[in-house]
Image 1 (cartoon, chains in turn blue, purple):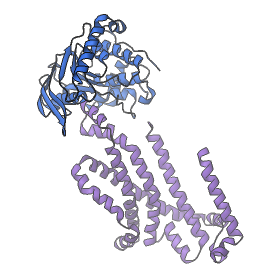
Image 2 (image 1 turned 180 degrees about the vertical axis):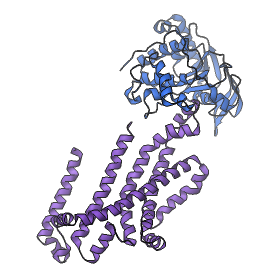
Image 3 (image 1 turned 135 degrees about the vertical axis):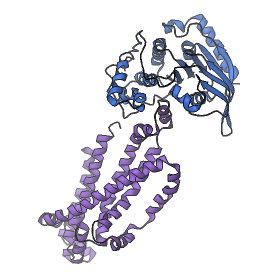
Image 4 (image 1 turned 45 degrees about the vertical axis):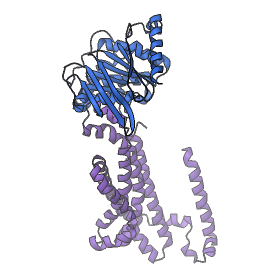
Length: 274
Length: 250
């Protein structure tokens, strides 16, 4: 298995196909309620992520984390409350500003890695050759060179997730919604991918809502971490990591301060699951 | 190749047993029939060779009917499947009717179609297409509906139009299902062609079988059956080969 993480180089990526208006990627969620049939999933939840901020969301299973992302993306509408992404409040407008990376990479098995990465470009009417050219420019930077023509089944878990992330990034949306993006990877690859994502966000800043089970992942990657209660999900606590996305991940997650923060997060989680 | 070994061995021993039973007159005795009514496989093989041009001419007629009828069903079936997939209203209106159409006894309808459309190729195509339409449509529709809803959500956040989702996600998902339907269809298409020719025709293997049946020419009757089976197996194998080429990600 190839485990080279291919940290992005420092010059900014110019992925100039942004279809969304450039009014920033602030995400505001105000007092939303959502239920599936009789099952109340979210209860009066309010959150805010500033432009280019990484907001981590942790909570027990079934607390409505994934539903929250689908609501923000405009794939669903909340029963009550308001959601705005930049100036957009309508679901279709929100959809134009959000890119969604689900837990499963959802690479299409009938396309090569490069054609999967360029899906957003093809969807906007670009020709196959042009989409490949633009996606190909980013393959080296993402540690994927040489695998352009590989089918997803021929890639390792970490590489698949990188292709999926590239696919999300190429869409050029100001807001990234990441739903447990590394949950399916083994511990070592997951750590590498977290460091890699930190590097990618340094050169290609976006507003990110990161939903995860993994408290450590949230505390390492996020500027702020919101702890949700068990269903129906509401905000229990908000934590502010000291050195988000530090370049030396191994060192950053072993400091006493990080340990104290993790203990606090675990306490909040336990409190919220009662 | 190994996986063909066993079925071929079984088939060979059955043919050998038949050969033995028929050539010694045992089979005719047991069935209480005249010897000439119970041909041995060697006799059938001899007829296949001696009447090869007659069989080939009529097989060509039947093959044309099968291919055209199957082609019509394929075009109509895929179009219906996509239409029913895209429109809830269409699906509710047509799906029960398509299922109900399966209860129509095609053998009984075939003579009516011949009365309506004459002895030409028309009624044969209609019968074959009717038989083939169902497996193609239903399998393809199931395939389109089996698409991963998360993949569709993913495509929507990547600015995909309805058409883009159909083309890049749903159609490739449905392709193996469509092939399954087509393989079932092509096998029954040959049976449909024979029904059509029995109902009224002036050429084709089904027509030849009727003549031979009346003349008690059992070796050639069996020869026609052999050619028909070979035709169905060949068409099935061709589709399986094409599927392997096209559905390369499986």
